[in-house]
Image 1 (cartoon, rainbow, N blue to C red):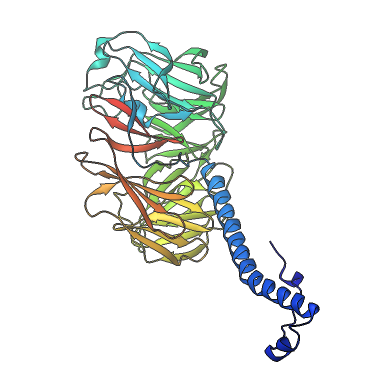
Image 2 (spheres, rainbow, N blue to C red):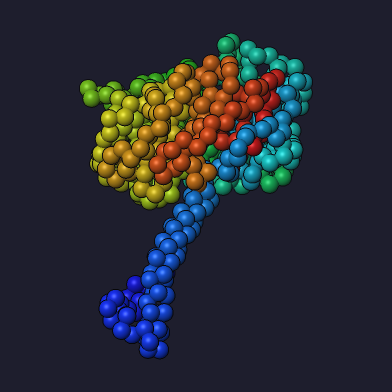
Length: 477
């Protein structure tokens, strides 16, 4: 950029002096210099302004590129959205399956009842590999008894998984319309690169499995007591065992999240165990249990000021928030440790201390996809009638952009330069849209209609997919 202090001072000649000097050669040179500088000053100013604008544009493009490269961001959205590929019928579970190595992964039950774990390329829709977990079994095709086989990533928080631990069973899910016990199960470990089997060993006849990094746990009733057994997924070596002190006849269900194991169906309510098998106390009055998209464990209890969620994260102290914790789709780290909760109001919390940092008069209804973007010191979220950008440090509103009227739900995403709202009809009928807004000021850029046969579009890595007819998955772009 030109330096202002480098400009030379020019002595302008008064008109009378100029007339006296017309006949003199030096005077002619003086007028020439004067005319040059009078022209050069506005030209230099224009060049300077253009340079500043070019520099500003370059900085904005660099910031957009940095954000676009973050986990959770999607590829840039063009002027239209088309169906790029469509999976085979009966593979709809892939739409909400594990995303790893630029592929979708899910447990699929074929028309003959065979159970497999499949990987599909997100760019082309091509099947990358398929590993059979159970052979054909007509009983597994009964919709009253959906198969309970599951595969769960075995990875440290935030790391891309390299393997999954699978419970392979002939039993139905615990929520089956007509529950029935399974008769057999196996614990199978698969390599996500190509689907080859790393381990395969017998397991108890259960319908659920808890997986933490380097740990797989099952829960059964032995001698009228719930017994939890944790083992190394690869070797089967027992790591620890927990026996509930009170007798029970109910079949337990087990899960994991936030670095802890949770067992349901025990006398007195669910119990929480650490990764080393120690009992973890829970808050009195806890009425709800669940996990976030990030795999954190959440409990919920009522409070005179509204419901309270207690969030358990691996290796960090629990944090309590008022309302419902939002899942961070993208977080660039510009406000470290910020968590955001919503309900009748929106609040910002310091995850390290549990201190409430701010609150904003923004109401988010519970049927919304509860996502938040934290980018460049701003919080982006959806209220019942708008997309809202807040100052991440104070909660003050930076901008709002009206959303479509009607019962629309969907994720809030970014491609770096834009904030993108997925607006899908809540009942699954009608056209879904992507509403594209400028990230910096919320200005409307465009609204793109998705193909009519696609419902409930979601992000999958850097891509968008949606549910299609006949249990298919549609790749969008």
